[in-house]
Length: 166
Image 1: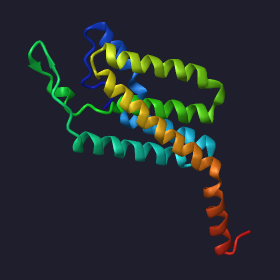
Image 2: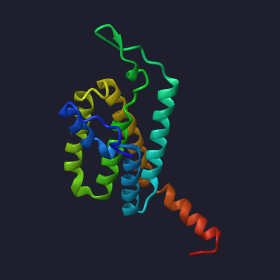
Image 3: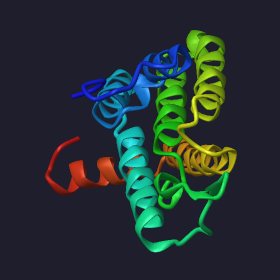
Image 4: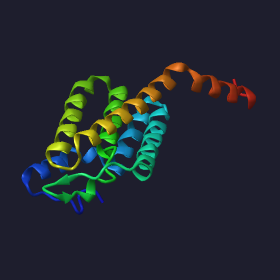
């Protein structure tokens, strides 16, 4: 349930919780599904699923050096790379911009706010955020390249002919 256990104090953390809400797992997936439906292409759903799978693999397989603040080990950051919120927010922004090109500027502004607030609210380190954005860039570029390649159209057309359809 989004925002169920969210902390809204200090006020900056509350603002960050609201602004980054579309980057939450379920909401981001639904937004990408809406964009994919509008485009009539499942490549954005595949990009979201693949990127989230890579994010989870990285979090469980990579070990980052321990981070300390005032001599205290910040355990929450041990498995925070890459930022899932930054990753999913960037894929949402890219998918929605592909579906509704007129929204690309507001979506870019929103994504910049997400990245800034994730760090300012203390949810992630800058490297976590950059890692999430880089992974999202790779996934989004893959979705766009797959759409533009025509590979899916050729396979669909071939499947239709094989079934006797024209």
